[in-house]
Image (cartoon, rainbow, N blue to C red; front, side, top):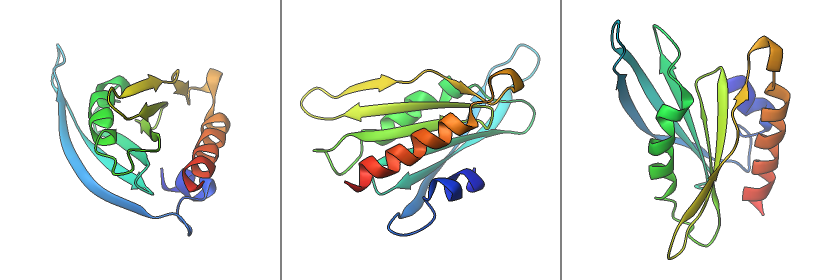
Length: 136
């Protein structure tokens, strides 16, 4: 994920990244439990990036979306939309949250790194656009 953050420009000023959370994740599997870890990075208090890691197999990105949304609901800038991205390295999903009296969110389609649908360029374009949006 670091190379993608660097190419998107998130590792350079004026961006600030912090990593306040890390949680253990365990999913039941018929053969054996899948254990992993979710790391969270926060860019400018408006863009939450969740990295889902697992040693044995890839944890599906939808497993991280409730946690991502919970983090996004804590955004201190309630007058601006909050954005999120969850990835397991193979799949990327983006969220947008508009807070207010009744918070509303929307979820993007899944962007895949599989050879037939290699969409890393599209993911990078979205990340750069989000970077522009949160700086304005």
